[in-house]
Length: 439
Image (cartoon, rainbow, N blue to C red; front, side):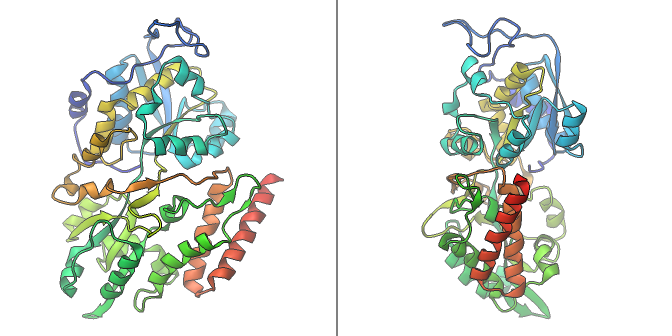
């Protein structure tokens, strides 16, 4: 989740005072059966007795109040929300019988919570309380369904991720090279990186670096890492080879090589050292104000794309809200989620730096409006590309498999190992990890 600029809670209240578009749902013990829903023509009844819900989340208290508490309070003042920090691990909370009512995580984490048997299938709640899923972007909803067990919807999406290519304008000016543009391909970016990798005034400037998390776990080509039908690795093939080779070539540019230290220190190289010309990462809004004060002169463009997937960014792996199967207030938790999906709440989410999950083009225009550092910069570059479709296979083994993929890519870069050897090793390591997990 991204950190947002300072903004008063009063501002949130003003924005959210309009009538919320999504209608709420009933409390199961207050007049409607969540399995059958209200009678035809009967509005769902809502139990307005005060209730306190707990939310497991990793965010600052300011962001929690702004993006979670306020949207719910404006629609349902009887619902109070308290954050449980992620320093308290879910397995420990299960053991102590204190699992929060709502779990906040990424869409890719759904199989993990299903394995722990604490992810409530919200399909009956959607039906009972007449939630219009058509308001949610089809690719986002499809991603959630793919991550859920067949026939289930193990949570509701609330926000999307954003991945961009940031660039240092001063370095481009120094070398007299035109700035990057929206809509570039990886090939064009590679050619630009070669021009921008120079030793100048005793300083080694690097043309390109990237944060490898989204580039693999939510890759633009929608490649699966594990075959759900066989529970075997799905990485030793031409498509994954293409992905590895595409990124690896940047680190073979003379002067842009990395070692074990500089491979992991890319963010500081861009933000603090100011020696990286182009840097691909998810949103780093919380760190940019200090970097600006320290003299970083930057802008952003869309994530470069592959010719076979033009104008496509990473897959959706944004924020999901999961209702705990152990919650005693499932209906009220569902009420809270519908409030977070209202037009007004989604506008507020978009303006503060997360993409809206609603199927409404107008929401794209709202992105980043309330973030000071994006003013007079290419803020809409964050939403100009289409998200990649979800991988055809999402499994509970993906998290550990992707960790192996990233580790193996790093090994390939640092040792200049042959890609075919690396992918064979990756396949073996993933299959071994799956076999161990199945014991």
